[in-house]
Length: 378
Image (tube, rainbow, N blue to C red; front, side, top):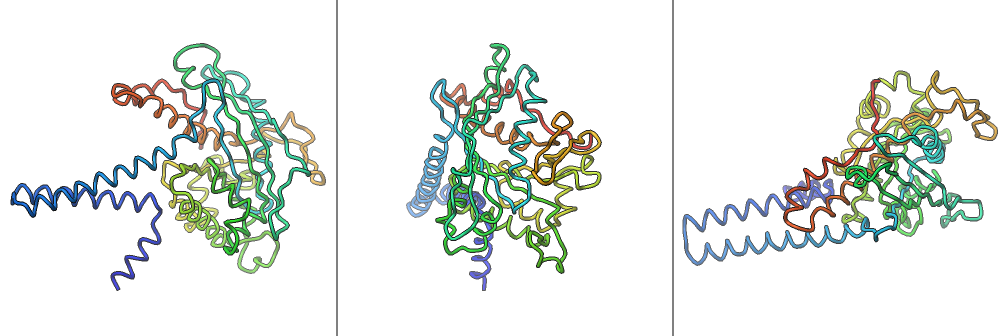
């Protein structure tokens, strides 16, 4: 019975949680062996201490190798942009494509003027077309791929602006909703599905939570209508699969409550509170699977929140015809958070070449200019 319970506990833990638990046990064993050697200095206790020390050093070396395997993703040659991949996950109609389009419009209209001496630029370098759609096997779902160039440009050569200026080539995989759900429902072949492969290999995963797709138990038969428990189950399974499939990949999850204009009073609430209130406690627990520093939550509306944003919209063509009154809400912040997380990691790697740099890393990072952030409740 205890072994069975232990197996269940291990199965519910992520790879990082297992590594931390192993590390704690190893250190405790080393401390106990050292105390035993001090109290009873003889050959047997020396052997036990050396064995515990060897185990600790082996564990440290394996973690160091794993860390080194992660680092080259963000290492760029001088003058070349950093290459990132962003994968979008969410059911059909949850607003994934709208989110990307609204991001470009927001940066063009609201962030072209310098903020803290830095301006923001996004360009679609390689737009996708119908001819570039990748068909997933045995499914009507598709995967759309496009290439963007993003840059945070400095206006002076001051040290803090130079440190905070980055260029990216961002490959965005806009996964069709049917495919994102299918890969979780059919485990027989999802490892060979292009949507799954791009989700596993992505540096940033945007998870779309759409409140308009929620329904009651009696509505489950309707197309694109899901219960909160079902939605949370998909998200939990998505995180579990991605965390297990590539444990050495430092992936960032931006969980977005989409279509915030349909939720009354959403501008006064924190995203976690919105998720708890709209999607329930099961969804909140599902978001605890990744490490806390690799996941964050956001509230967005690609359409905008009236009355500040009231663009004219043509439902038949799904096009906004009056863009001058189009002010998307919160759209850049998931991307800004992910970019800043990557940049801070890059800077830590840069500042770790010598012992002095490692000792002063925290002080050096204070010069870094953070991205604009959402201020909920304003």
